Image (cartoon, rainbow, N blue to C red; front, side, top):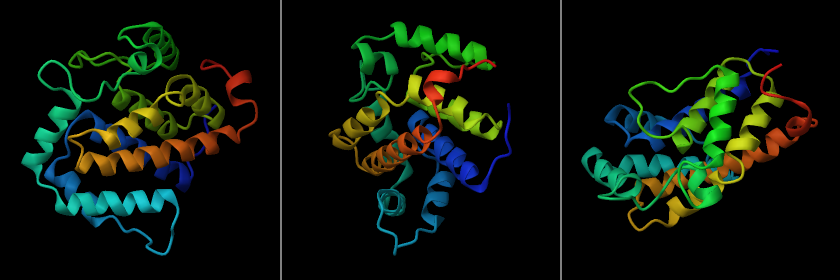
Length: 205
C-alpha cells in the first residue's frame, strides 16, 4: 500500500539520493555548488546538523580534480580501493555471497532491475541507498521501507562509514562519512518505531 510522501519523507529521500550519488562517483562541480549552498542551522547541535556543517565546509574547500583522485583511491584503487563497499564483503568477508542473492530476490519482488550499463554487484552501498530513496519517493509504506533497510543496510552500512572516516585518503569523504553515520543511525531509530516492521511485513503484499 502506498502512502503520501510527507515533507520529512521527501528530505529523507533526498539524503539517501545524495549519499548514493557521493558513493557512486566523486561529486561534480554542480553538486559541490549545491553542498556549498546548503543552509545549516548552526544553533542545532545534533549529529545530523554537525555532519551537514562539516560536509558544507568540506565542499567549500574541495577541488573537483582532487576529489576524483580521492574517490578512485578510496573505492577503486589499482587492484582494490581502501574501501570495499559491498554488503557481502562486510557481512561474510567475501564478495558475491548469500547477502547478494537475498538482495537480488528482494529487488525482484520490488520490481527493481539493474541497468545493463552497471557492472558492479547490486549490493554496492550506492545501489542500496538509491533503492531506499526510490522506495520513499514511490510512497512505499514505512513498514516496507523498514524491511528493506533492516535486511540490507542496517547491519553493515554504519561500519562502512566508520571505515570511510578512518581511511587514509579520506579528506572530503571524511565529511561524507560523518553524514552517512549520522543518517544511518537516525534511520535505525526512525524505522524501528514502526510496529513489527521487520517481522510482520513482506516486500510483496
